[in-house]
Length: 117
Length: 141
Figure (cartoon, rainbow over the protein chains, first blue to last red):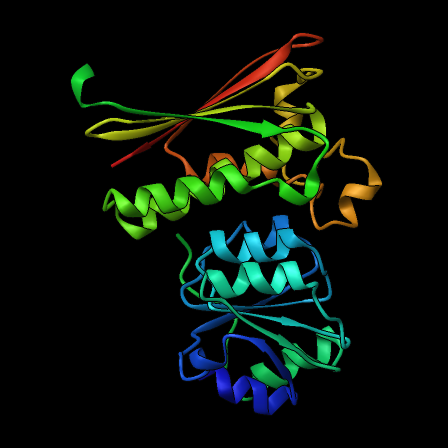
């Protein structure tokens, strides 16, 4: 699934990484608990979360994720956006709740099970 | 062999959750410049990141040393924190002594040490209550 498809499905705002929307995503993970996110390595993944702090960006960077979607209309700080932009990470914000946002992507064919390391 | 080892030293600042993980980000960039394989870099970065978070939460910071050998990468995380009274208990997924405010920041789920073990080939914990903890992790190349 292309990142721009995620933007369309979730009616999301693109906070940074507009030039990377043609990149492809192969798996997804929805969690507010970063330790759980760090437990499974997935290739070219998107993270959906309601948590907003710089550790979300660092967790995504450690995992080589491509995109982070903040749910429930949450917006990250300028510092977080800057950190993500510097590291080639697309940040999106959607009004959808976590469950619904995950469900829409899953229903559109984005499975959750990336390869485990 | 000693001529082939590359050593790097980082300080992990305690009490500053916002900047926790900076050393891991630097290590990631460093290993990329050295041409290390992406999956190895990811394992090193995640293991070190969890370790850094642990030191910030539990030990008011510490030091992180990275040693790169021709056949392995060794990460040594050392702190002067409270120590771990029961290592077996600490290694159980879900066991955590982190305060509630850490949980609201996305950590403290009792996954740190298990994740560090999961992503490394060897992990050794030297700890003494009231003195500190040193975690040595090895990832084979």
